[in-house]
Length: 283
Ligand code: PAF
Image (cartoon, rainbow, N blue to C red):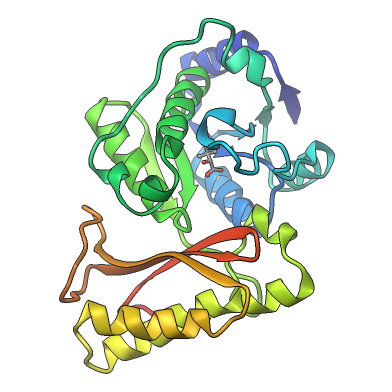
């Protein structure tokens, strides 16, 4: 396994791998890898001949006052996990090389980014789609793997890839959870012991919603109210959004259907967590 920081060198390596006919599988991340990332890498290993991981805490997707500076970073431990998962190349560029002075080009997906996290984190998805486009251009992947925990991100990246005719297959992978149900996230490290146990309200709420839906409740408002009550029962929980949406368009769905997904963003103390589930699937 090799760690490359130079943008041009990385691109040359990937272009020559493609010329040799090697299938490139790509897992873009911001590092501080956990079992969720490992599942993406393992699937990438199965599907690709050259497995590339990027580790880049992308400044353009963080807003003012968000956690860009404090976002956890540990390249040594990430390299260990990557090597064990069979990664061939890690791309770990510097921000000044990805966005040199005078940088002026951004990618914006309209519509899908107006809701959910796009509403509470203005500019976030513009940063995500810009960096993912740049990474795709540098890494030249045949396929790229993303976790479904970032449900809206995955929908936005699929739309972008389709709209721009990018020749990359986008693979969405299931959410990986801790034994007690908490969705894996690099940000879980911010949680104190008490916050860690309060954070289980998210998965509890998803399970409650699923039971209501499968028991015959079809009103999104009724399900959202039950979810809200469960979450606010935790003293340090602050709701950003609870929405039930159609899975592809992310439009609100007042009467739930088979394609309904419940999406949550909740602050536990200062830590913002997201989670989601299809209402007719067990979590
Ligand atoms: O999901 C993430 O870790 C990031 O948003 C991504 C896709 C690597 C872009 O910086």
